[in-house]
Image (cartoon, rainbow, N blue to C red; front, side, top):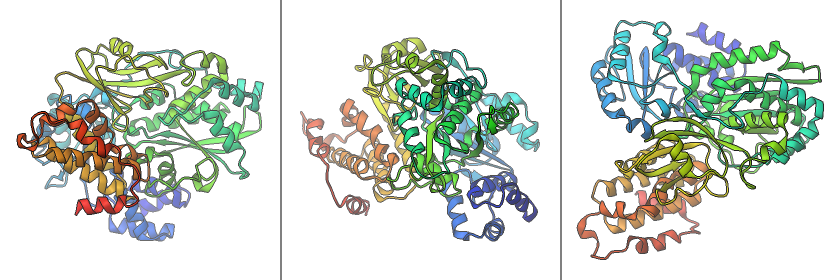
Length: 592
């Protein structure tokens, strides 16, 4: 172990910012982070043991306890449950002879749940020793169990077990054809960096991760900072359940994404960049490293790119299982080898980001679009979409439809059009933007995709009339409880209270007063949480309670309200809840 860790230490250039990368390697080799490993690392990196332990405990795919030679995680997303995940999980556990959430007695295999693995178009899905498995079935499980019992190394398993499809169903401006390598950079250098930034501004491109901040403005702010050291970060940690577009973009259009990062670096004056790749996409790592090497060979990365005096290179850093790291400041903390706890803002990353230097953080799709704009011009992009939402949006469509996969539409496209294209019938409603987004009912399908109406990072989960909407609400609420980083009381305590209160109501033990209390807790968690996770954690409850009060009311004890009871009227005071200075103390009191 000491020799192995020493090699990792040297490979990662003796840097404490590489702590997470080193811990990932130790976990993969030994299937846990032992006390001895922590002691060795603490001495080598000259940091406290407690700091290392806090990082291990923060990430889902790192463990202080041995997990077994074969670590199996099953995706617990609602889209997997809709495909009979629970019965398959029970079958898996029975065949392996181990309970879900436990290590088998002989130490060979462990089986547990994890959050959405980004395979919603081909579930039920999971991970084996970090590598994605899709379309689980009883025959597939039998095959996997047989390989495990024979102790066949994972690298020798059939490639079919690890097959991941892209499922691109509809293309438009960005996906119809990938730009040729170097073409966007050549055009950028030809027309000038200032002029290219002006074209991106003309395009109206806004961040595609969900927040929608103006891309050109972000780049300009960063370029104007006095610090000479600047960084470019591509956020490929799409942990929002129901989202998988970035996985496909990196598999099919990685050159274009890296080109977008490079032109950003040229514009802002950055010499180093990072692709922060979510742990669940480990299967893409080697391919992406090869693409980066190819770009270096072709003088599209490295020193004096295209002989224009620009020096820039990209490093891939893998996450270790933490939804919160999709938030840009938490992502930067993770890049620095720390637990991914969101920073206080301001200052924003463009002022103080990675290593407290000016940093641009953009989504995979944003960099893809920027490269296209540098080639075709801003007006061609702005001609699509709407005035406030120019260009196209790439959607990850899953759930109850005939054709799950990737769809690209101009902003302003109606929900009805999208449903018709993907073969969705008898629809009850749609979760747009994942659990942190909005649930819309079948009375709202004339609404459109766009920042002025239905903004989304890309998740689009369809539910038909046979589904119980409360199943999805419970799944999403459980998700937020598990993924809360625990930093602030409104989120740490509030999400747990939401779960308890929701379970009480759904299980038929609640009164009308319990729903009023549920809404009040929702408002407190939403208004007083430190970051976007807590601020959106109540959305699954709030958006469905608003549209389907009768579904919640039906779960109440019959004696809890009088005939003619109006739930919406009872909720009015809670919905007016706004300024409460003692929100944290109040939630702690409710918890007690």
